[in-house]
Image 1 (cartoon, rainbow, N blue to C red):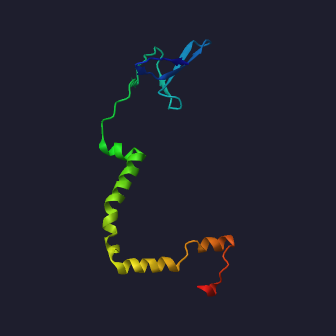
Image 2 (cartoon, helix red, strand yellow; image 1 turned 90 degrees about the vertical axis):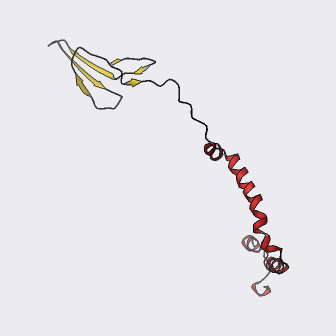
Length: 129
């Protein structure tokens, strides 16, 4: 095995087989482990495959990535949106008739009734409703 290491470049791997009986040398090159093997002539010429990127390229500034990449920013924007649109959604409920209808509906239904039935704590019968 012939491997060339460098900080600046990546080199292919070579497998060299020397047979002493008939004085033959065979060379096989492959770009990376598991790649297809390519036969090469005996005087080996080693060329770099590509330069090694030592430093990672710095990403540019993006407002969209700042907002969507940070969960706290998403929660802040969601809360701000609720704060801004909640009064507009509740304008219809300012009338007394609408509020009385909601209160009547809430008094009629016990929100804990399904849980009480599930836990076996419901002592009321269906006739009580």
